[in-house]
Image (cartoon, rainbow, N blue to C red; front, top):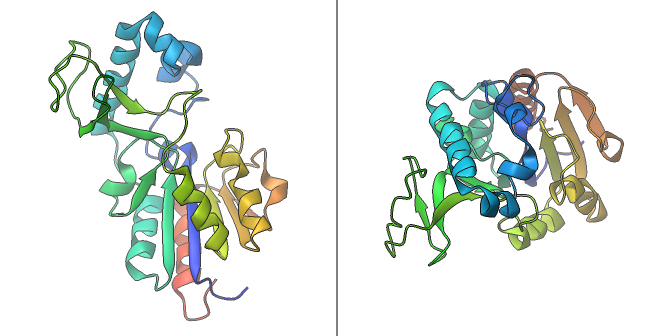
Amino acid sequence: MAAPCSIVILTGAGISAESGIDTFRSAGGLWEQHRIEDVATPEGFARDPDLVLGFYDMRRAALANVAPNPAHAALARLEREFAGELLLVTQNVDDLHERGGSARVLHMHGELKSALCASCEMRSPWEMAMIDRPPCPVCRAPTLRPDVVWFGEMPYEMGRIYQALEACDLFVSIGTSGAVYPAAGFVQEARASGARTLELNLEPSEGSRLFHESRRGPASLLVPQWVEEVLSPAGA
């Protein structure tokens, strides 16, 4: 395959799971203690805001106990050294890409370390708990919620993402289940524009058959190997 000039990368829960962050499917993890409908929907928040705020306070605090892994570091290296266009889109709300060295990350599902005010709709960097209803740094209203895209809400910057998918010549999906839309449809968008597609995943995703190539294994091994290929003189 010819060396790519423009790459769009999508990362999912699998890349963070190797750092110890619970996924929806984590046995015995934080998610298993709650129904998704109760902690990851606007309706759940309206029903029991204390439950939802406490849940995300725990998730935010847990970030202090995890660290980026070699997959995060490899993608940061690619950002630094790749001569073409690169867009890193993540479904993850953690900050491991940034802590791993990536500077240009698009969080399509929001961020744990960000607060969204329901009153003024402004977003603010956030490290503290929200359970005690602290005031919005902008308007001072006690109406903060996690700046996380819940089920039933529109992911961020979809226009920018689709433009990049239309223009790229390589789309790479890393550690995703291929079950959650709209991200699950990105491979088809990329292929329709003529891009090559590559999946790096621990096990087959629901959309594996849609990729030109799928590689199986831990992201911490597969991603550094792939980045080395892209940055080698022969390209990917």
